Every structure is written in C-alpha cells, then in structure tokens.
Image (cartoon, rainbow, N blue to C red; front, top):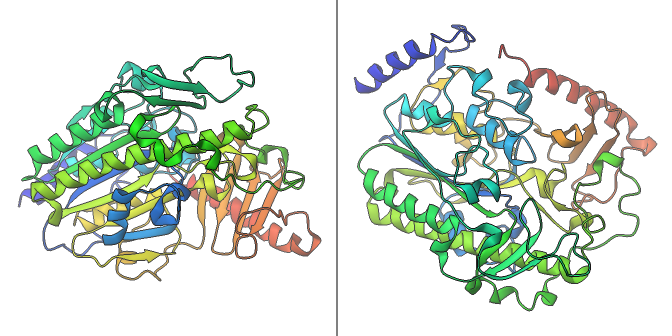
Length: 487
C-alpha cells in the first residue's frame, strides 16, 4: 500500500511539468518483484581506467577491495560511458538520457531540459527511499571544486541529503612535482587540470576521499534499517595525483614503471581530431616524468581502493549487506601513455571503456562480455528493486545479464567526445569512430579481434569501404535515435 501511495504521488508530481506528456511519463514495471526491497550503494571513481585494476588484469597496481566486489559480483568487460569526460557522462547516467538528448555536452546540470522527470536517485526518493550524495556524483570541478567544498553542477532535487568533502588537493603538505609543461623542473606544484604528483603528509582523512569514506560509513550505519540509495563519489585518481605517502612505495622507484609500447608513426593513419588533447609531446613529459605519472596515478588508485574497503566493511558491519546492491564504476576511462596519449576525451577503448561491477545479494559471481552502457544503470536498478521504470529513460535493463552472461541488449555501445565532435560505435568486433555528424572530420575503424590495441586504422583501406559506409549509416540512425524525445 505504501508503494502504491508513493507511485500515485510520483505520477501526480511528474504530470505538472510543462515539458512532459502522459506518454513520456507512463511507467512500466519491467521487473519481477524481488524477495525484499534492495538498497543501492553506488560507488564511483573519477577518471579511472579499467586497465589500472588488478581484477581487470593489472599486475602492478593491486586493488584488493575492488577485487572483493569482483569476486562476489558480475564484472563487465565491455562497459562504455556515454561521454568521455566528466560532465556529459555523469549528467547522462543520472538523468537517464544520452548527452545529445539533454544537450549537456559540457559541465551543466541536465535539470533545465529534464523538467520534472525524475533523475535516477530522485526516482528512488519518489518510491520511499532515503537518497544521499557524498562528494562527486554529478559534475564537480577537480581540484577547484574540492578545494572550495561547493556543490558544482549538482542537482539538489536528486537527494534527501548531500555532503561535500573538502580537501587540500595539490596544496597538500608533502613532496610535490609538476610533470606537465615543466621540462626544466622550475615550476612548483600547480593547480588546475595538470599532471602533478604529491606524496602527501598525513593520513587518509586529510584528503577528500578519506572524508568521503568516513561520511559514507556514517550514513550506512545510520540508515541501515531503511531503504537507501547512497552515492559515494571518490575523486581519485583524477589529477592532481595526491595520496598519503604510504601508498607510494609499491610504485617506487618510478623508473620501474613500464610504459605502453610506442609505435613509430602511430598517428599517421588517423585524422587530426583523433590525436588526443594531452600527449607526451605537447605536455613536454620526458620518459622519467611519464613513468612518474603512471606511478602517481597508481598510488592514487591504491588510496581510493582503500577507501572503498572502508565503505564495504561498514556495509557488512551494518547488517544491510544482504539487502544491498553494490555498484562500482567510473565516469569514463583514462589514457596512461597508450599511443602517447594521456587523460580522457579520446574515443579509444582506454578512454571510452569503464570498469563496471554489479553485486546483487545471492547472485553468483561471473564475468560478462556483453556490451553495456552506463546509461543502463538507472533502469536496471529500478528493475532489480521492483520499482516502476520511467518510460522515457533511454538506457536498457541489463538485469538478466547477472544470471545469463550471454544475454545481449544491444549490438553496439555508443559514446561521444564533444570536445572532438566525435562519436563512437563499439561492437564486439569493430570500433568505429567518426568526427562531425557528417563524418567530414574523418573516421577511424579498428578490428578489435585482430588489433586489440587499436594501432591500425582500416578506414582508408579500400577493402573496408563498404563496411565504413555501413557504419556511417548506422551512426546516422543512432544519432537520430538518441535525440528521439520531446525534451
């Protein structure tokens, strides 16, 4: 009766939006009723590549706590973000819309176009859940927003409560070095979106992620006896690479870090927009600095992983673990020297692919190679929790993959790189990238089975022209589909 009453209230509230129609707000219950109402614990890292996690095969950077989740959940190997930097990606999976549907291709909140349609966590609030955000879930500037402790592009309506985790970031006491555009070594540690490594003094709680874990622990303990949706947003390993000193020894001396293969002429067969905005060349990072960047990144990952462990321990102590779905992911991937690229934005796998682990109580652990998008989390969690799924959401319910890893919901994943006016269709065999909607900026085509590192662009090979043309038509249809709404 309580759920029915909440549903009636939700429909009445949603119907007042001038931007909504009855068809758009029609709800469909696509899930079988679970034995009990699950909680959702959503843990997201910032700028994390799946290649840095030991459960995804990294043999240098150990992530035992994220591995704990992988050992009892379903680990997805072909999960993709819908925008290859923070703003578009986060607005997408929280709103339930592709970036081009809302027009959020930068760092804004999607609410102006969403209107009264519920965001992901808001939908759970409308069905009687407590929902809280700790630190970065929607976009929040790093390091600037973390230094100031503000809300960034957050959506207040999406939360019962929200908490920010202020930290010193690049100003942390300790041993710091600016690696980017500092060839003579004279530049001190600087802020902004800059490659800086700080081996920081003090313990975990000096920094933002330590504070985030502590608040998440507090909220889990406080709300363990009621339905909750708690979002825990860690900001590492986003630059600056800042972590307490005790996380660095496994990666030192930095000279032992191994860089990806450097292939002569690697960029010669790709269009100009395909060259990433941060490269070893334009960042003026020599090999020593490149290796230190990898070591600093890994130390930040290790620090973040330790905070994940604190949150998981609290969930187990609380007694709520057996009724809580746990999700771990990142907003997008990250280059660590592949193709001499660094950071995000590109549409190659290292940047567009994300780690994704979903743990449902009682579900057998497994590895799933089916194609999924972060956009699928909203409808999937609603389905698993027995809630009605809003008809307008553009993601797909992937809950069946948790028990049947061969199940497929799409034949290609879609992502965008707005800075490059780039678009990706990634299927099981090929990665197709085009720049500009009419492809006038150039195209890339990679046979992932034969060339998993994406070194050989086949788009200019006459033998592949029919395939390239077919992908262009498929992309045209996809772009029309992602805009097919009345926002």
